[in-house]
Length: 215
Image (cartoon, helix red, strand yellow):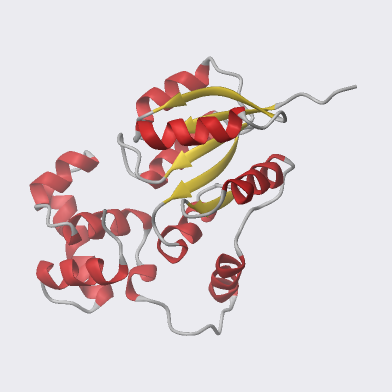
């Protein structure tokens, strides 16, 4: 008896990227397209009425902070496996993504064959990590481990605020984007400067650019 195709949902805000991923999925007889979305709200609404086995999720989706999106997916659709795709290097987002409930993390510079391998591994209940990411995870589990980059000491929400400060956004703009008060953003900013041992927003801009945390 022939096994059912794995139903794939694609969530990415770039139509060209979605088209490329869709072609990879449709070219594999073991996969089937379930749907696609370009922002978080559309994604969550679509999944309510779309039978899906595995979600290919971009880190930079419009509609809210990435950790919040993952949390919502885990709470509302616990049976759907999530494989995160990102242009950001693994050491910036991967550990946070896996900690928040993703089953795998793959940067977009990987080949279609690697993507297909990741999809199948995640669908079977495994975790997909590259050798580089495996070493990164090992260092996070090593209680005596080596020195971590300052941004790795931040909570998920602090990290989101830091990235926006590093992009040059004002406190008011960040408050609007994250739907929190300006006072709360200012509190986060104070904690971020302290944890990262920097003095000004300009220092954060330079740091974010150096580590590739923006964009």
